[in-house]
Length: 220
Ligand SMILES: [Zn+2]
Image (cartoon, rainbow, N blue to C red):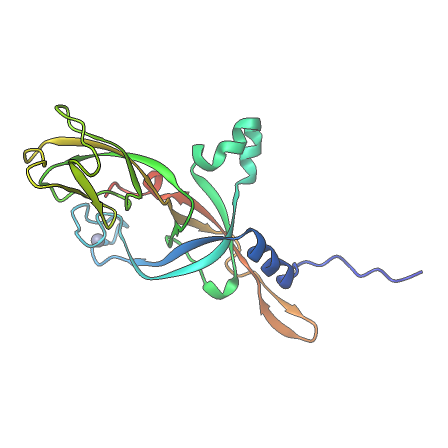
């Protein structure tokens, strides 16, 4: 008879790192800090040009690899749950402890893509929420615009060619492809550390709940 080891209360960090390398996705991680416009009651200035009313500023972008899964609760929806990633807009993100992801941080997928649509007004300060990777449709009420003939995509933004731009104030609808961004809502295991033999304090991977930013933030 052999003495079985008691179940571990932590998990194998090396195995996690293997999983990360096999299944991980690359995201650009930006750290959040409270904007100067934040008020004592927790609200922020909707006209703030630094945070666009979101109340947080973002800095220090860095590419990291994390494991992204749907939330377990979405299984309650049966087959629909398989699509919970998009329907509910929330995901579970597990990251190596060394990165110290935290509340309100922003993670933008480097490779995954979403389709997004928004309305712009010519001449206003509005901009595309995301950098456009590809424009599916761009039109005003009077005309449909074509890539290379009417406009170009310059660093993810729409730039009309000379004499092709509609008059100031014209509403233009655009449907485009972009990399999605997520905002961290909850740090479930922010302090999930353990002591390994011999007595060595070891930081464990962290798990966070994040939400698609356009469902979470005030529109920018
Ligand atoms: Zn602000």
